[in-house]
Image (tube, rainbow over all chains, first blue to last red; front, side):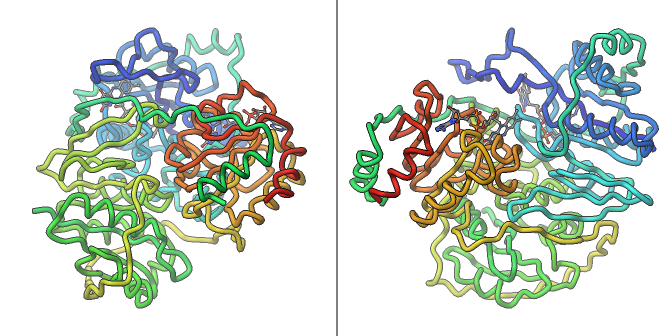
Amino acid sequence: MKILVGYKRVVDYNVRIQVKPDGTGVVTDGVKLSANPFDDIALEEALRLREKGVATEVVVVGIGPADLTAHLRNGLAMGANRAIHVTTADAVQPLTAARVLLKLVEKEQPGLVLLGKQAIDDDANQTGQMLAALWDRPQATFASKVEIADGKATVTREVDAGLETIEVDLPAVVTSDLRLNEPRFIKLPDIMKAKSKPIDVVELASLGVDSGDHLKTTHYAAPAKRSKGVMVKDAAELVAALKQKGLL
Amino acid sequence: MSKILVIAEHLDGKLNPATARAVSAAQAVKPAAIDVLVLADNVAALAAEAAKIDGVSRVLTVERAENAHPLAAVLAPQVAKAAAGYSHVFAPSTTFGKDLAPRVAALLGVAQVSDVMSVEGAHTFKRPIYAGNAIVTVEADPAYTVVATIRTASWPVAASGANSAPVEALALDVALPSHTRYLGLQSGKSDRPDLQSASKVVSGGRGVGSKENFDVIFKLADKLGAAVGASRAAVDAGYVPSDLQVGQTGKIIAPELYMAIGISGAIQHLTGIKDAGTIVAINKDAEAPIFEVADFGLVGDLFKLIPELEQVL
Ligand SMILES: Cc1cc2nc3c(=O)[nH]c(=O)nc-3n(C[C@H](O)[C@H](O)[C@H](O)COP(=O)(O)OP(=O)(O)OC[C@H]3O[C@@H](n4cnc5c(N)ncnc54)[C@H](O)[C@@H]3O)c2cc1C
Ligand SMILES: Cc1cc2nc3c(=O)[nH]c(=O)nc-3n(C[C@H](O)[C@H](O)[C@H](O)COP(=O)(O)OP(=O)(O)OC[C@H]3O[C@@H](n4cnc5c(N)ncnc54)[C@H](O)[C@@H]3O)c2cc1C
């Protein structure tokens, strides 16, 4: 079985995002970029499935500008067999990303597509569900445990009410939650090895997908700031303050 | 003129209050009609509850055995079919809505606006990105149906009781897939208030130190009549189940009182409590970032301070 993994590059989660003063975007110049943490988890899961003999090949996919190559090399260094780079100068929205992934799915015929549940830049939490709908296949989102046997996946999902378990026929789309696994670190020799692994480059325009970028972002603003409050000296003063506010 | 379809969320025969929050957001669009769609295996009680929510024009129901559990793959084709004639489809931005709405949007061939925090116009919305570090204004193309999830913490629960909207059964001719099967739900159900709707929440972090120690958080919460929450670090360490996680990738909440105990205040945690009324922080590190946003801060060892608090409560 082949596994396709979404491997998106985002602004590193440790970066304190600043909105540009003119409201046209956020400052991304010189900012550290990393793999979307959920995608590292998705990739780790795919690698473990290969190590267990459930999967035979792991392919990472990135949709983005020409300089995405170094990022995809990290995915290869982590252990993916090969990468597909769909090139586009513009950032794509989830519906377009899902349509692009569908094209790759049709060509690659994976048994499983593993994506992150959300990308931490846009926090959209859509792409996996959209791909599953367009592909007319099952989705198991927010996965914290995945077991595969007999052409089926049993997936534990982190939902508001607790942990839900569903069973889906393969092929299917699974999106990772944080507790699915802890991704491995990349070791130096693996970086060397990754240099010889193949990256297929495909131009987005050549795939014949309709753009689903129906949303226009017209303004960026900094969030309303909470002002720093007061320090109280002990439990009694805290309780008195809360009582005065009518909270106790 | 806008016509909005709101997808009802429910569990164990009761509407989730997130539904009435989505109705509030729908009202902000000032539409000609707001219809609530109830998909269940047993719709009567749910429909009756939905019909009472202020602002609801009609309640539409689809009663099928396959709708017993909230499987997006099963519900989405029904919602997509029912969406014909509507300008907007809203679902709460809970795990239910996040799972379902994008599947509906893709079936309709439209983009989705996630986590709507304010309505600026029928096709213009504000939503957070980068864990709430930036708020964007998004314009949806009026040529398409707007599918959106509603950030529940930004919207009040629409009042209920004065309305009695008509209830109509929908006959939808849709084939449903059998490739997705529900096996079960392991819920951390307790008698404590629900984390997402509670007016008071006491949360513990890594600083609490162990599963056993978390009892001090539960005890304090019980004394206050509060729900219990946690940071990701506390969940990852196995102190409490995952459904208690508050933050970017957990629950986004807006209680009147939030007490963060042994939580440092990482940006991913803070994004979950931005809309809380009053934030109290208890932490032994006076430099902890949580104090930057706390209305009341108390520096010290939680194991000493919580018993002291309980004494004066
Ligand atoms: C520097 C920067 C600038 C941006 N500027 C804009 C802008 O001006 N306008 C705008 O609308 N958006 C902009 N974006 C956001 C970008 O378009 C979003 O990534 C897009 O809307 C998809 O949303 P999402 O990634 O949150 O989707 P989600 O649905 O949250 O993603 C879920 C998963 O889908 C997969 N996936 C999604 N996209 C890709 C991809 N490209 N490659 C590989 N896998 C993928 C991944 O597995 C991911 O974990 C910008 C992003 C960055 C990093
Ligand atoms: C993609 C991504 C998504 C994330 N999503 C979330 C999310 O949804 N929610 C979330 O919470 N986090 C999330 N995180 C994790 C987040 O970055 C932090 O790691 C996490 O919130 C830290 O939890 P904490 O504050 O409990 O632990 P720490 O940062 O370790 O803080 C523990 C605090 O306890 C204090 N302390 C220790 N002992 C005592 C004592 N005896 N008395 C008083 N104080 C004490 C310490 O001074 C310290 O400030 C996410 C991270 C990533 C990368």
